[in-house]
Length: 108
Image 1 (cartoon, rainbow, N blue to C red):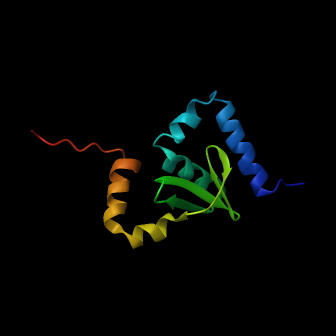
Image 2: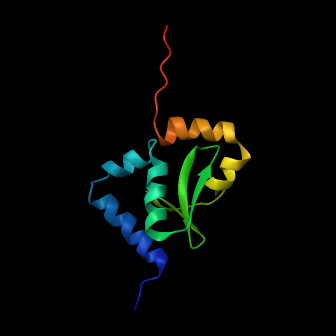
Image 3: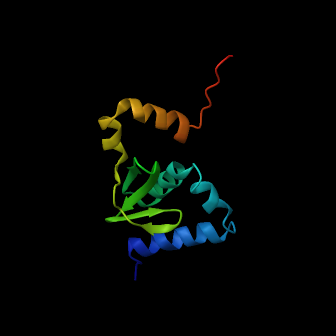
C-alpha cells in the first residue's frame, strides 16, 4: 500500500533532520528557509508559500504547510508567486538578501 503524501513529507523531513543532528534545522530556520521550501516543492510538488511578517518560506503540499520543523500553521502565508506580483520592489529585496544572499557593499 502506498503511503499518503503527508506521511512521505513527514518521513523526509524527519530523515533529513536526523541525519544531520539538528545542524540543518538551524540553517533552514536561520535564513535559508526558501531553499528548504524549494527542496520540498521539487520532491513533492505543491506551492512555495511566503509569510511577509515573519519573512519565512514554507511549502504547501496537499493543503498542509511544511518547513524544516515539520507541519506548521498556515496563518498569514500566501503563495510566493502571488506575493511577487503584489509587491515587486519588496520581492526584489527578498530575492537579493534572503534567497540569493547577495551582499551590497557601499564605498565609504
